[in-house]
Length: 471
Ligand code: ATP
Ligand code: MG
View: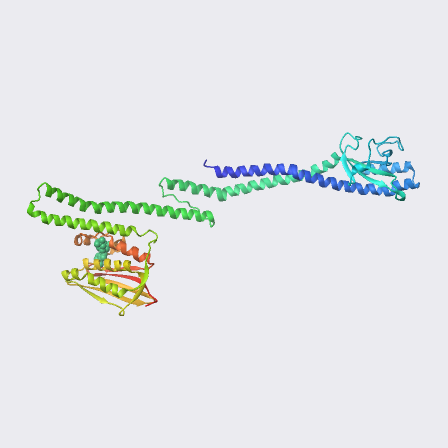
């Protein structure tokens, strides 16, 4: 089963060889014989007409003796390796080069010149005068435009076929050489195509078994090389996908388990009376807090789930005023800000600033970034949201002077569920999914987002959007 492709090619090669042999021994053989027969008949016919129009005619004109004609024909038959006869129209043999007697009373029984039909030759045993087939050519002797007889030349067909066999040998040798050449091509094919294909299939089999560590290592600049590269890339993707999935599931289960454990613990304590009635309110509030967190976690996960890994998110792109969205978002945070004594300062470019993007999703980005800025800011500090326009792009910055992000965490904040150690203490409600969503949204827009942060000093998030052409 494993070597079928190679077997198929080997089989095709053998079939090619056998068919080639059959073809040569039938079609080529037949073609060669016919060609040689016709050519030989033509040569003999030329000789035949020559004899008829010169020697035989002279005999009938009386200018040559029968003995002399017999001698001439004998010599010619030796030279041409044939038998020559002169007969009269009734089939009586006048001269036979193979026989010393002439002007005999021997008739060719059944002779009829019309048996030649429209041709000047025939291949048969010539009225049973021969024990094997002969090529017989005739030419009429016509002194004074009257048919007085015929000159016949016979040549054993076997003599003619011997020549065709010799030619056929050359064809067979050529066929053998082609067959050997095809074998060399088959070997080359095995080296250049079959081996890489086997390598690809065996590595693909390893992928099926979940072993993604194997590599194709085929670096040719052809379709196979491309296929191998694609496979390598796919294996790598699958491998990281599997890793990501494992990490994701363990994160999700961890984040769901801790609130559920505390909810379960408090409810059991309330039910069995460990928590007295007058204290129950406090713990029910904690349960409410935890359920809210679970709720937020679920909706964030659902939100993230909408983003495909290759940016297949459907965006409702339209032109809208980003300044307006920023003002509205800032208003929404007014309550929390006044609680924490934090002020939001807006430095917006122009009265209105139109961008083309998915409005609801960009609003969510600004909401998440402002939410983070407030969460990780010290009380009595200020947050700045700024818009600037440059080279057809709009830059939106959300800047705080809060706790900042440690250097080694800067790359990780975009990962799902990632929270820095400091923020874990400060924000128990946070899921660590907010920035992952932000990143997905900005990437889906083919835009960029960057973070600049110094621990203990503050953080600035800057992202770009396309400036709208229609204002
Ligand atoms: P959620 O957004 O679901 O409430 P979260 O805010 O903890 O949770 P992200 O918004 O993804 O999660 O942020 C990830 C982590 O990055 C935060 O936990 C925090 O450690 C760090 N971070 C994000 N923004 C800031 C900021 N402005 N200042 C300091 N640290 C930040
Ligand atoms: Mg957040």
